[in-house]
Amino acid sequence: MGEGQNVDVLVLGAGAAGMTAALAAHARGLKVLLVESSNQVGGTSSTSAGTLWLPCAAQDDAKGTCRDQARAYLEASIGRGAEAAKIDALLDSGPQLLRFLHSATRVRLSAVAAHPDYLQSLPGATLGGRAFAPAEFDGRLLGPAFARIRPPLAEFMVLGGMMVSKADIPDLLNATREPRSFLRAARLVLRHAMDRLTRKRGTRLVMGNALVAQLFATVLDKRIEIAFESTVTRVQRDGTGFSCVVGHAQGERAVRIGKALVLATGGFSGNAQMRERWLPAPAIAHSVAHGGNSGGGIDLGMALGGAVEDKHKSPAFWMPVSTMKRADGSVATFPHIMLDRAKPGLLAVNSAALRFANEADSYHHLCEAMLDNARQTGSAQFYLIADAAFIKSYGIGMVRPGLKSLSKFVASGYLTHATSPAGLAAQLGLDPGVLQGTLARYNTSAASAVDLDFNRGESALNRHNGDPLHTPNPCLRPLDTTALYAVRIHVADLGTSLGLSTDADARVLDSAGTPVPGLYACGNDMASMMRGAYPGPGTTLGPGMTFAWRAARHIASA
Ligand SMILES: Cc1cc2nc3c(=O)[nH]c(=O)nc-3n(C[C@H](O)[C@H](O)[C@H](O)COP(=O)(O)OP(=O)(O)OC[C@H]3O[C@@H](n4cnc5c(N)ncnc54)[C@H](O)[C@@H]3O)c2cc1C
Image (cartoon, rainbow, N blue to C red):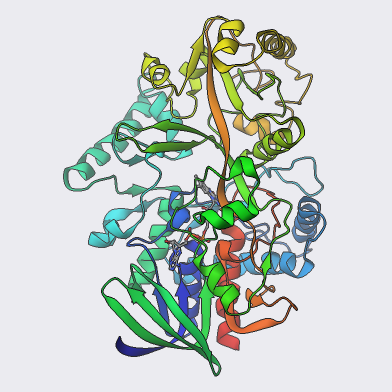
């Protein structure tokens, strides 16, 4: 075993929550060691959209109106079990987190004016201002350390490694029609081409990759030590702190932790046993979270006396995904977040060939409807159905808009194509009469611009993600039933909600509700304060980073 080392704080896991905890502890004068099991920082945070839901974080709220509205919305969203102390903690410390990030780190976030909350019918829902998005970041500033940033999902990049943000899409699609779009698209592509001369992927980072790079750049600025490809293999309480062993392929070293161990290993998405134990059967097979998040923090927390909250409204947060075999035999998993489902001319059906939900609702809520439907009707299969014109305009899943031919996707089995409802039903194993009826009813709704069954296109959220050029209902248009395509979708988790029980300062609690001295959990290792509810964009990263900041503040004051 190598030389012993003394630190005040050991943070386990270098995702957004872990790096935030490390930076906030360092800023309070504590000596920090960050221990990361992989050879890269970022975990799921780096492949995410990078949005933080931080209500009232940047508003002047002298009268407290914003907080009252946000509190009402959170209580209504979470329902039974909502914890007032954690709601107040988020509302108090969201603004403090933002001030800290902007004054002491390279993270730059701005409130998105139009980004509706996901449960628009609840009291206190807003149309924007609660979601914060990271500024784009130039990966070249990291020098060789750029290789330490976990790349985004391959399916979210174009031209072999170019990141595309939501704001880039209109310019890329209109490049051949609008001179301004052409210029911007040309600049993006040229920059990317230059990057590719020397690097494996583009260095213009957006969304979660930008957030992670900004945090990591600050970790490097502050010279906080990171032990890569390492983890805590043994730990025991030692007076006021812990004695632990940090293991690496090349050996072990003893570390004495004077004040606190912060668990930030990203939850249990990558742990097969925990998935079996805690997730509903239809959701066990698919995940879009980082596979290395194998519940190590939760295991360690339990071994040190922490309790797990295992009764949330939903044990994880969901996204509908489609899958396709890549040329090398691996399976690509594509999350249908917001580019296709709300656009006009698409519907979803179950294995009875019936619609079962508003397809334009949030990814999490559509998946909840899939899980409910599977439970109630036994449906084992779900499909998105659209027509050729839809795919040409908007794409669907892995199929990008504007493609001349879809034959590659049909041949691979990703898309199922038919020239009639009966033909599509035969290929998908659905009842042809029922599918014909479902499509006819959808088309009747679409012709009148009013969804007779699921209110598609009525909520501000639906309309935000629809096609603003399609009026009067931006989410509804009849399908051409002679040119139909279907994609099978599954429920996947984007991160887990169940986790270690904590108080509002992220101190891990035992089964009696007493804090385990010196032990903290944040990010998805901490049981989500939302208890499986999904109020808006940034539901995991907003609280994840806020409670990381609060953990550091508490450690410094203890
Ligand atoms: C496509 C997609 C989009 C998303 N968009 C958003 C969004 O916009 N907003 C939002 O709030 N959420 C979003 N999410 C969810 C969000 O990304 C995650 O919930 C969040 O990143 C979790 O952060 P974390 O810091 O807890 O974990 P991570 O970022 O996953 O970090 C955990 C780190 O711990 C390391 N680790 C794991 N085990 C160990 C161990 N035993 N020892 C040491 N290190 C370990 C991992 O390698 C990893 O680096 C999205 C998810 C996906 C898949």
